[in-house]
Length: 162
Image (cartoon, rainbow, N blue to C red; front, side, top):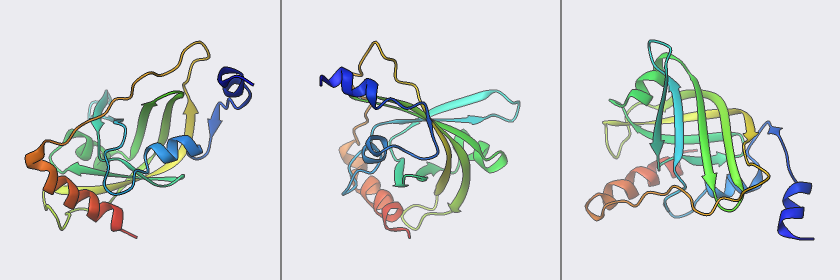
């Protein structure tokens, strides 16, 4: 069976939690950078707001964790309205959106009091992968060398939470 035939037979539309490939992509070990997550929230005027994050992690297939600066619009929006959508693109065949509800679980991180940890309970995962294409590259970020110690400390704190 060709890779394309296999993709067609395993195609899904909506799930209540992350499928294995998406979970693995957002569950990087050893503080590695995950594929960029586009996090969409609702601004005070009801307009959508989207921002990229490299700190999103899958804790379980039903739970995501995000590190965010407390002054960021995304953080302020989630504190006011817990509705959130997260999008992922990852080679070769992951294009999905996650709809869920967010809550602040650590208002001030020990590693940097200007940052918070937010968890997102997954309510629905929608498959946005088209049948006629494949994903060749992922959106990724690289941590600048001078910020690597901060990133390692912040991700370490988030990964070690129970």
